[in-house]
Length: 445
Ligand code: ASP
Image 1 (tube, rainbow, N blue to C red):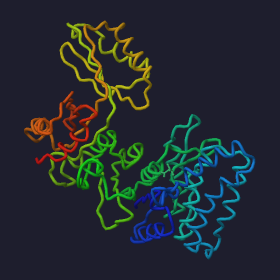
Image 2 (cartoon, rainbow, N blue to C red):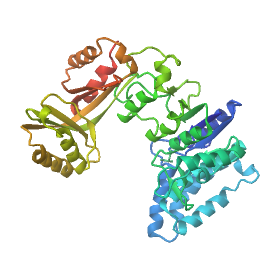
Image 3 (tube, rainbow, N blue to C red):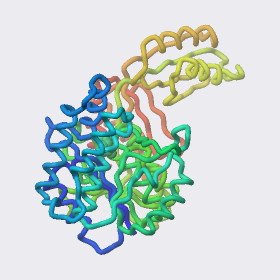
Image 4 (cartoon, helix red, strand yellow):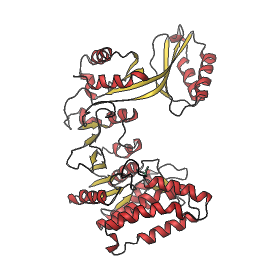
């Protein structure tokens, strides 16, 4: 059994939906299908989910939501008309739209309104394919505090999906114990797909998107990155954390725990093999074969700040690192890396979403609480992760990396080799970021 999830670009218009139908019908394997709301048809277009958030905002200041609802109606009606869904018995898009309008005019909450894109997308697709429709609200559950409730969800899936073999399920949302709808964060249909794959014990979770797979480097920075054939969950985690995202980060856990592989596929190039994401042990033990490359991929992010703290005899001062970390905690800053020397310790902090006042407050408090001999702040640094299980078997990795950066005239501000030798993190100035990524991606090992 497989679970197939199709993203917003795959569900964007009648033509793309037809492609999706062909993909789903191509194999006779039993499969559940999870769909997103229609996404952008071109760069200028608006995603249905964004229209729905705008609809919710509009309704807050108007009694009748008609003008803001119209684009949603038009979008779905156009798809349904082109697919001639009105010919299908029991298909009642008008009725469904009326129910939603009634709820929105009646003051429905934000998550309910946002979830209707996925609901209608799955409703239409189930009719097109003549498959059962399973409302995510009935099977995906959150607890009263809004956390995903895996136990109840898995029980509900076992109970309800058995009777709905091959069902089409809307992504992105689930139900609260009080019956209200709650959404995951943006892009959350990936999470729904992973949950359904985990709950049904799928042999593979196929995530169909609009790229050929996970790339070895950012195509906006490097020329001709290769599609990674097989990547382990741990490598994926390292690369996605550094910004190379194809999947919602939370979509990994429900399948990873159960050793279910994910395959990234391209709806617009279904012949491509895509990227297979597999449990780390299966690659390390040789159960899954892949090309022996020392590096699997490279990714990075700009805008970090490093604070280098120096104090002689630091190693003898008990609780020194704890004091530093509690200052970070006090100012709501999370630690990314902490390279250390005998009398030095650095903390690297991600500046995204951080206010200047938090940084200033942290620096002042650090001075007070650990009384350093010297403290240097290096602002605007970029971190680059060079990732691959193959690295620990390869001699001269570090010299190749530093050599390539030297040749590219890039100054290295910090190096941190992860304890598992799965990754090497290199810090450079923001302005050297692209140059460094290109130099490392071009390494001929
Ligand atoms: N439609 C939702 C969004 O735009 C969820 C998804 O597509 O995965 O974020």
